[in-house]
Length: 459
Image 1 (cartoon, rainbow, N blue to C red):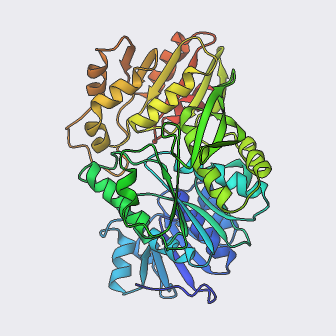
Image 2 (cartoon, one colour):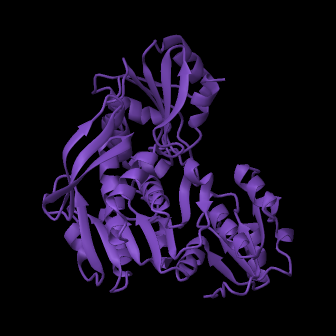
Image 3 (cartoon, rainbow, N blue to C red):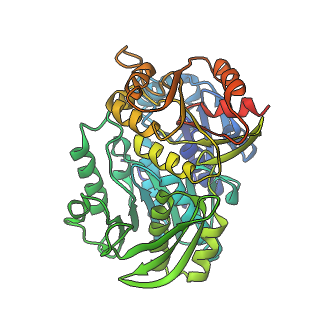
């Protein structure tokens, strides 16, 4: 595998440079005076920003984009071998790394590379921890899978020895990482187009945990059934967090919510209450996320004052229970939830938010995930009073005719919920404007383009 000497800038070309992680890596290398080029299928705010910083960004992917002066090519798991640029790279025998391999090598430049993993909550927890590090003036480098207002985007290049980034299990890409500190938030079934099932997923996280060096730290969800399995063979120090396991190193007790649904709790460390924590985000899932961020902060000797300051400053990231506005007296929230557990967490948090009736417009994400969790989606969505299903967002997959959003609608008939399937976004918007009442709460939900519905309603 090609090894980068970060002290000797070279020309790096990114295939798919507009992706939220790829754009961040490109920006870090630009800061290190590398020559950066890249391509993407569509122009976006990310590509425009990179161009303004000096990158040569090409819209459209073709073999002619691969020029003789390129020293290294970086691509993601979404780029297949039949991609014209990747084919040209292979033909010209230009060194190539995956996005994860590049990030893994970058980690070696930091004393404290921190990787935030888990089926759910990676972006939120990375953002929470980033706020704490910023409050403590730690000057971290941050790479987050969402837009964080505190850093004006998805990337921040710091000057310290701390890097914090997300670590995704899909295609086992995080096995290329070399963290000193790893968080495992939760382990559940997902990405079943790659994994055979939960046992393979658990083993994947176990392998990730074992990559930590002896002097490293594993921050592990102690409420999980598989926590002991993941601990096996880990040489690093281990701390746990939880809301059910009272033996966890960091445990939340006396949990309460204010009138906006924001959480607070007493923090127990090794069985003793040490602090009272306030959050400016909703839901029990965010209490869990905050516990993991606190565990890392304590390891880095950050004061309780700075921890609380950072957590209070965090009010969420884009597309994570994001307030969009009001129209005709009803409130619109947008959320990235696309897994049954995430939907349950979001809708449970929404129930604590002031509202009359709760509406959810859900766009299923990928056919493989939809068919794997049909019953679970139906049960999770039943927490709403009214549900509208859009067509499935294909993402990287092809429609083989095996599953349809109407299958979720059928399974929801056992619940006392008003449910509809509406294909066209324009028809959904018309229906909502005619039906939602003053004081109602509408959540647009999914990892695709369902956010457009709320934004169109507010125009």
